[in-house]
Length: 198
Image 1 (cartoon, rainbow, N blue to C red):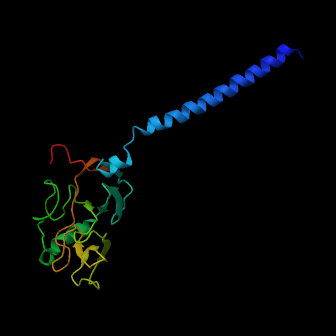
Image 2: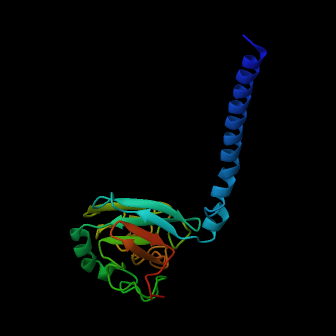
Image 3: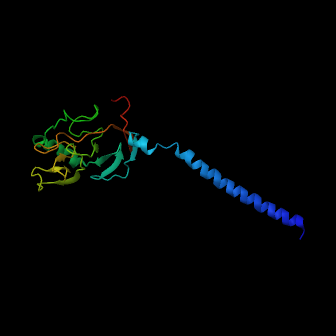
């Protein structure tokens, strides 16, 4: 074996090793560059919109996501749940949501752009606890006139399936509705109003 053969083999090995190390270096250098395109945690915390895939949300299921450091609930209501909303008015503090924090385009008992999907800020308007969904219809230990809704375990505030507050509880108002819109039938974006809405 000549010294030329040894040098060529060594040369090929060094070129291959250098190329591999260079490729890894380029990959590692690209990661921060690509990550710089994504919104930072700080940007998300101050209100970057959040897209949520709702295609796998089953009827009666509640999905929770974070937006602006708040828990946002997306409830896919059944037709029965929607129909029950008309039976609560006499027990509610603000059934028409006249004093509620919600976008202008949210009106009526359903309090939703599409009645099937309720999108609301899950924090109780009393002290900010997260109420739990109690979808069962019928008398409950905390409310004899119960057509399904949200019950706050911290101080026993109650809300119907549209987030409207019951009379005589610590919470002073309905659960808040954030700005949101539908990108398509499978995606809702929280933090962005529908085109042309305020």
